[in-house]
Image (tube, rainbow, N blue to C red; front, side, top):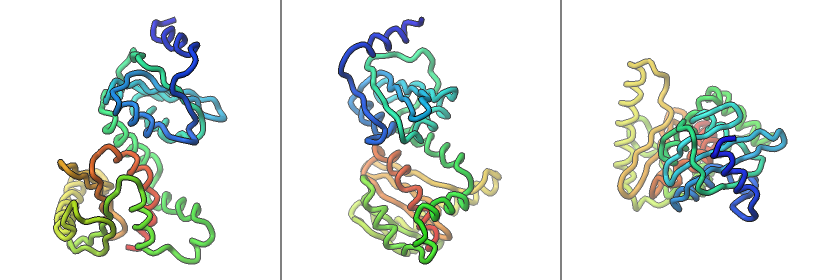
Length: 258
């Protein structure tokens, strides 16, 4: 038995420690909380009801390695982020034997979310799933853009939501605009996204999906929604992983209005 697993077994025999249920939190939130406190160790996860096991090793703000069953690295980490039922336990001070990720925690979460998006199928399939989850009422009438934008504004960390036409004019906005000039944001985003899409077309690397822009006092995340561009503004990057996860279905629904 390796020294690493002897250390984990020794810790498991002790009472106390941080443990809980995935129904009350998720791996991304837990990892961000622990890493922000400069913790080091491993989070062990057991999924219910199939008892599949996963592990996430981190050292301060760096995600060192991850496994989910037979999956490793970012692929394994992305799989773990999708677990919604199960239990977890944190063992402090445990070192990883292998380095399969080697990214900052925030960067790893964003990369894993992108991987989850790519594996989820095309936009039409995702939109169909959203419509099905909304129930039979959605078959009669699609919610208005204003209602969906208000739901986006309720996601923790989002200060403002802006819808921009491809011509650079702001179509709609909600929330606080104190951090940025909405009109300047609209013109700048349209110019940037049009250029990015043109580059993607020339490189033959599929369609533009999302863009993150980080400044000293705010972060802007934008995605195409129908024939327009949606952007959310947040104070910093610490909540981007969770924002991306919680807004995915809302962005798809918003695309029905444009």
